[in-house]
Image (tube, rainbow, N blue to C red; front, side, top):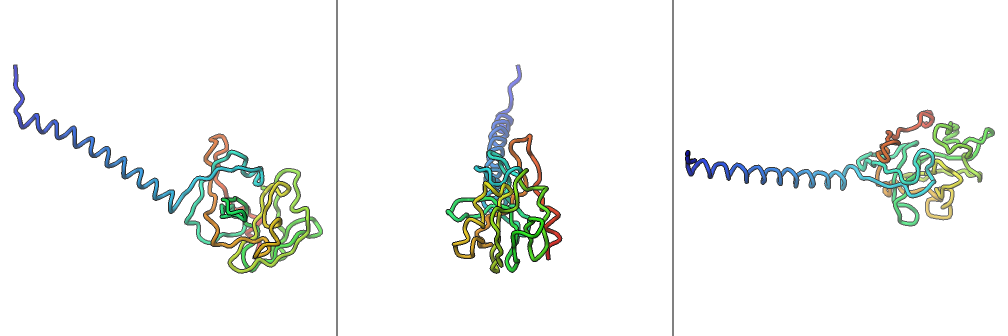
Length: 198
């Protein structure tokens, strides 16, 4: 029968305790990092309505980049909406742009350039049921849903300050990806049509 020296027993106990402390420390660091990322970099949002179909469906969950910089035409953004609720829409025009509906081919134009919206507009929908023409004030955005007949967007709030546009400062972030459900996981990119606008 062998007897372990007392020093070896203490070392073994200390090793077990140290491993637990290290694991707890790493777990706490992971939680803190995740909370910091959510607070300052990425945030998850749930889609509650049909206004962005078929790009985003009811129940989809999207990741929003909160360090996105200035919003650009074509971006899908989450912002503090007209009713003080988180809202998601597509940026159609930015400050200084003239946005109009519609040209002879029933297309929305931005600074006279017609938008080809078939890649994201809801199937069978049309760019807008009502004609409009707005010069977007500096520091503001004109936003619309992809399912135009089901979207209460800038067109529905023209009586408000900015004539329906929203302040750039109210933007929480740019939606960069659908992550849930897994079957619909996809990156969200800016449609090429907007790149032609100057």
